Structures are given as structure tokens and as C-alpha cells.
Length: 340
Image (tube, rainbow, N blue to C red):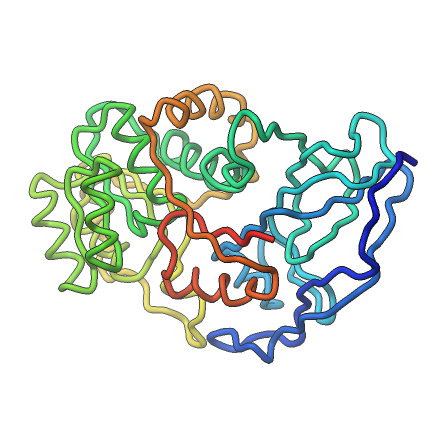
């Protein structure tokens, strides 16, 4: 095993104590200390530096059948993380290397080398590998360009547009030649960000009035693409404004994640018949083949400043749960990151 720096005896991590009903509560989780693990053959020990918290994690706290296994009661949770290798028992990864992996919600993680992606902290800030150049960025790219079949000249509407995915969707659409980009957000400050910094053509605060009315005012000629992060009244409004041949990519429905009763569906689905509209859900895991193309396209835009991004950074693993709850409340602008 490679020489290792002196490590603490314990690592702190978050466990799921019980399955939340409705909004998660602090008592549904446990913040515990465990022994710092040692890497076995083909593994590395990583000291996490940045952790990701994302809306989809709420679904993994339930035991309902889904596209990914639920978190286990009494076990540490998972999520995107980037950190420094502090002990290595694997070829190709040395102490001091930085890697992206999926064993967050903890200070130290043992990771199989095959599940660790080496990243360059000199090429971009480490935190960006969890956001604009990471899974959230690829989600925006794949959902807009492949699932929604975006083409130059489209009018695009994005809900949750000040979030990590939504903000990137709108900017990629603009950089790829959209005729008009419209976003919704939950505060006047976020609306200002969309207009002044991200270059959206129009934006509105969905709390100011019915989404359908505000969308019609922002897009009087209708929309060709809707990128859905919210569901609910946003989805119904988008269907109501969809042009002929319009496409809807369903990325998330954060408005219903904590519901204890089924949410009512859009009341105007019949409109898809006249518009020949299409609604399609997608998961980023089905589109990792786009990763090289995504990096080729997006990294230069980030480096040049053409594509801007925001991060909301919460300090300390002890605040990991509060950061996650903040994502569900919409407290974040851009990617929510926990810095250890």
C-alpha cells in the first residue's frame, strides 16, 4: 500500500434512521461516527472535499419501487462526491490524486478504483465536477438536446430555471441558437439572475400568479420545448402553450416529491393530440455516451465565461442534511454543494 498521511481515527457520516413520510424530519436521520475504513485490493481511500445534495435523493429515502435502489435503514447514504486519495491499494490512482465518485454523505470513503473518475483540479475548480461539468451538466445537455430534440430557432421554457440543471438548460439553448428562452423561478432575486446573468429572454416568479397566465405573457407565440424540473401546474401550463410538434422532457417533478397523496395529473393532456406533442421522461444514466461530446461543447463555454454557473455552498458535513432540505425548499441558486 502506498504511504499514507496520518489519518484521524473516526469518520463522520449520515445514516437513514427511518423512512420519511411527507417532508423529511431531522429524526429520520442519524449523524454518526465510524472508524476510518482501509482500502482493500483495487480500492482507494478518499477524503471527501465536496458533497452533492440533489432532489432525487428524496426518492431513495422511500422504499417504493423505482429506477434506483432505496437507501437502507441504518446504513450510510450515497451521493456524488469529489475528494483526494489519501491511501491507495489500486494501480492507476495515487495518493494526492483527486477523484469523482458516488460515496458522499461521509467524510472518508473507500472506493473501488473502477468506480472512481480522476479529475484535474487545475483544469477547473473541484466543485464544478459535481455541477456544471458533472452529472447535473450532463443532465441538462442530454435532456435538452437528445430527449427534447432541441433545434435552432426553438422557443424553450425551463422550470426551476435558477437551479443547477435548469440554469444550464437555458444557457445551452441560448448558445445553440434558441429563438427565445423563458424560465420560471421562485423569487424575484432568481428571476433577476436569469435575465441579467444567464441571458434568458424572459423569466417570471411562479409565486406571482398562475403559471399558465405568466407563461402565455412571456411566450405569446407558444413554446416548442419544455424542460420540466417541477411538474404540477408548470407541466399543465407548458402543455397549454405547446406549439405543434412540441416536445417536453421530464427531468424531475420536485413539486410532488413530498406529497403523501397522488398529485392530480395535468387536466389538458388531450391537447397533445391536436399539437402532436410529445412528453418523454429521461434519466441521465442512460446518456453517459454523450459525456465526451458534452465536455467538448461545454468546457470551453465555462472557460470563456459564455456559460455562467452559480453554486450555493454550505460549510461542514454536520450541515449536510440541512443543505439537502434546502434543495427541497428551493433555497439554492445553482448547484447546492457541501464543503468539508
